[in-house]
Length: 397
Image (cartoon, rainbow, N blue to C red; front, side, top):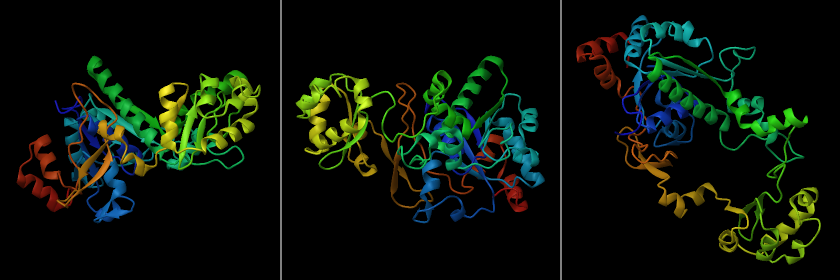
């Protein structure tokens, strides 16, 4: 098997980042993901820059491993073609604003009549129901409305967007999880179902500890930078040449000895975790002074083997390209350029390591309509003449 989802066919109407990131997980796991795009779209409109050899690196990084087909969803012939493809599909995915597919005559109610085993997964900003359901959402809006932005940033600073598009990408991951769960349920019942995933709710799921503290203690948790509400020290500290994270100290006296600060080991302000939390400013001032004496690598070699706390280097993205552990786990892979262009670009490999059916990145991003003939021939048994007639009518590209 190429992967655990080999044989699963996904008709993918998603666009931008959230949906494509979710369906890319399915492609990595062996599903045949066919990305449906509009025929009139131009290559430069397929994704944001920056561009490499005329290719959107944004689009490249979220659509690897997929096939591409172009269908005019507004034409009667295009709609009829989608319905035929749905009969052969296991999954349909889309991340339009709720009601868009219904207006096209291709909503779940219609497509489920074509295939009762169909899993139809819809990702939107706020879900298919509720007072916000018709609102548009992008990554920053999802982080803001779902609570994560209020928890991110310095205590005396403004709410801060998390540096990666976690609003989009967490929604995409939950989309993939929902699809896998629905496919498993279909194994038992023989019937598909509708999967409704909202970006806002995916962010709320990440706020689980903050939400339970509100429920249990009436708190309204807010920003505290890299500090932890319950543990000290916790977070990044500057070294001679970079940054190192210190967290979960379990042997305070030994830790202080390792950083050459025996004076802090027996200071009543720091001897137990509760005291350290109450005197956090003085604690961090002492640690900043101590850790600035050596390089990040030197501290890592001194502290990590002693097993007195959790320690981590704060890697830049450039550092990841040279990290021996990243290399040993094969977590950066070369993905070839599309359209026969020379060379390759590096992308993160799938973090899912399955011993018998490993995830694999089998192809680059799809060319715009590059697999139309292949998909229509394999899924529907259409001849060259039939496909040519559809192309002549403008229904496909």
